[in-house]
Amino acid sequence: QDQLVESGGGLVQTGGSLRLSCVVSESIFRLHVAGMGWHRQAPGSEREWVASETWGGTKRYADSAKGRFTIWRDNAENTVYLQMDKLIPEDSAVYYCYVRNTYGQTYWGQGTQVTVSS
Image 1 (tube, helix red, strand yellow):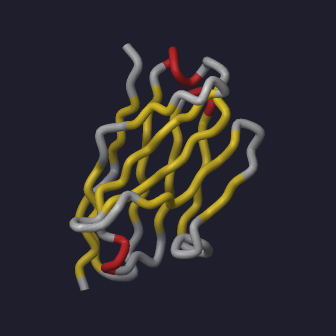
Image 2 (tube, rainbow, N blue to C red):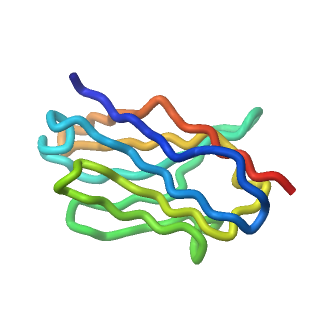
């Protein structure tokens, strides 16, 4: 079954850290992946891109994430990670991982809630 399953969200205080994980099904992870990454969506806001990594290993970050967030993957575990440090209340959102293949198809996870208290 094609799926992405996120975990690792939760409640943390300002300045704290969380590590999000996204386990990708084998059928997606091994089929001509172009890139993968994370978006987030806060209540009343549009979904915004946070970070991404191409299959070749090039990483990019939104300005809001630079210096605080780190994306990487474990190919052996079919897992994409997002380490989030120095969290602030503005980081509170539902975080979604995605995988995009070379055919232009994008697969999304169900999301994991991150809440940063002030």
